[in-house]
Image 1: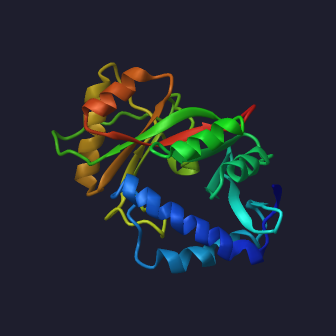
Image 2: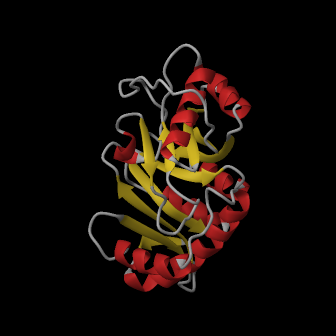
Image 3: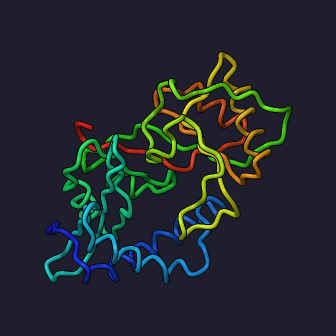
Length: 244
């Protein structure tokens, strides 16, 4: 297995692997990862742009016959690199392409039910750092939402959009259609964390958002319990590259 920079001619092969992954994801989380109409037509165009423009760093793992077996594209988000479009049709190829990521610090997402994806990340030396707990908003009393901008937050891949610690009305990427915008929350304030999560869900309902995604660190089982009790489901795991 050889890992090399991706080129425009690889876009169709990466798109084919990505289409298979999208279908798996839509089974695991039918709302969060609901495929948008035309996703299979739009994504190859976007991938073609990414592998031929400056900025993103795209890599593919190819077998002895030159066939693309895995891919990963690193995007500079400022504070960290987000390694997206991680796809593979073989364990060794997926491990190789993740191990080849040289950008630091780097984070990637693995769907929580994706045992093969988690095994590849672990074999490449990556570490599970946080998770996205996702569920619907819930109407409630007028929410009091204190600033969370100064609070510490677990690693996440939402980049500058979460510079203030929370963001509402965030549109989904073009290839996904959860039914509307979502609320992202990277930290909750106050001693009553259950009340804080309820307030975030109420604020999301007031905005008309369709989902809430709460970032929870692996070292915070208390907040994970609050999220689960609130009806949120652990859906995405965030992994960091070695030495990140």
